[in-house]
Length: 260
Ligand code: PEP
Image (cartoon, rainbow, N blue to C red):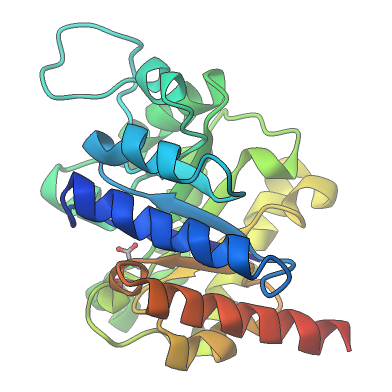
């Protein structure tokens, strides 16, 4: 189970470092409590060295929230894959709906970034999800299939651990209203079957499929209990250690129930 925090454009560097330190401290004092749960945090670019440093003795992985598709050049304000790997960043969120909406990112743009991430051994967390309008028009499945196909076009993945997909219905992000567990499962099953056609069951079955969109401690159990939901991409609830760990505690309960 992968519990990932997307901090977005929140916290300054000392606050981000302090949050990472609280996470590291809790895991070092309770190493047994979160067996089976992998943790990942994705802070803003400028926080990366401080957060990597605070988490250096922990098993928590660190990711960025975007990457440029080129190695270097005249791209004022952008951040490259070699820059990310140079600060020991392992993951990168790509195609988040906020990037698609505010920066007009297309599936082709995301595809170029996914290729670039893989070329530099970064694990892409590819975000897909429909808007409310698309869902109400009955197009949720076709939209998500098109996004998966467009973002992964020509991307070869041979090991499950080299890719993460996040289903994030746009209408659930930051609204406090998550998808119902069954709704989310339905879309995760669509994504899994698409990945199976693309990469075969051996790879597709192990690719973590995260649900994102107002996941909180009170709704995490139902979502994480679904067969094709392998974790969460968590926005606002990842900004406080209590709610982040509250979700992780639910993940542990689900794992125990599944093993029983
Ligand atoms: C997100 O933006 O990735 C997200 C899931 O945000 P929130 O949990 O705040 O809805």
